Length: 287
Length: 210
Image (cartoon, rainbow over all chains, first blue to last red; front, side):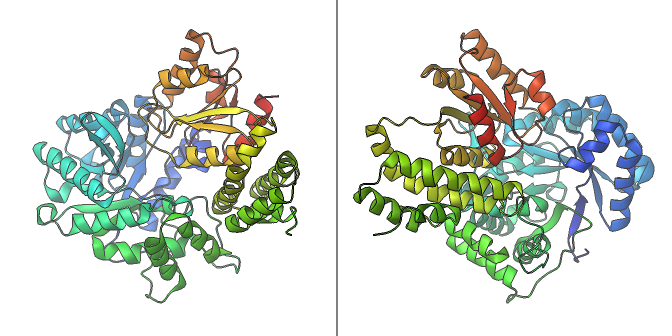
């Protein structure tokens, strides 16, 4: 799974993953800790921890327990400031060689989460696919809107004492199998703008890569793996634009593909065509 | 002339252009619009749902088929109104306040339309009061709520309470869905139904209007 220059945040400990939710629901903490070990051994640089809507104290407990089985730093994953606070308070940097945790994530809709920097230093994932303009919130529909949302959040993070190198900008990736509104072109365009802005030099960029291929079959009609090829095509396109992190799976075989690979051509067609043509192009790719 | 049965295949394979042509030709040939809907179009979407349930179709096929269905429906709707054919039901759908996710909500809306429902899409970040207003417009409305965040799913309860406060709860069914939602959560907040995918949401809505 290793691609040089790509940091993987292991995604498995997440309440929205059905098999993990079962472990949580059954109180199978050893099963959860096994996921941490597997991801650690599999090459994850961070271990994401998302406990869903469970109490804040449960997050604190999970952070302590996961840190007992891995020396990798954690990614505290919740939109809820109380749960985030509990996770950050429980986090012990000494167990991770002094490394700061990631906080996944802050968006314009929850700026108050920057106040959590008073608890400890963390690397925020800045979700810049949503914006608030004149008090009205909405999704970013263009590359320029996404880029402006990145500028706003990066500025706010710097006011909180963070440097560009602490920031992980997530421009938001949508499932390619439902993308009839040019989201992929928006994402690629936003990454170019962020990458080319000298004021944002040194920031990291990340996406939730598995989200790109949800709702698609595991294999093409000819039996070839579908998800890893499309995700690899995305990495092939996005890494030269500054993508250097993903929330993803250590089991997936990510690789940089040649330009003439069918998955790369499918991705390029989807960026160019947009609209329903993109969805049909994806369907034709796996049918 | 083209055979109206081709409409079934056009929707099943998601061929919007063919769906449009066959619909126009069938209407020009005097085929009853209600029969066109009931004998070919709804059965085609039902078959799409079945293929989805058994992993033969995936979400792209659902969307492509729903678009072909929609293309034919747009031509047919005025004729159906003239013929006095009513929709399968009316659904007011939206993502709850504070939540901007729309992919799942849009998918469910498309499939409900394809299933013959009148769908009023209120969009994302919808306050409880908007759901109440839209439900008030017609008795027997289904309110379909989507949430993708653990911090916003609680808004679903707020919508149900607002419907109760407005005296609409008896005449309004509420269905819920979204990544953090479970049947257990739906039961806890007093929703009438939960679905974990867009195809099953159509079957659920049909049950709720029975």
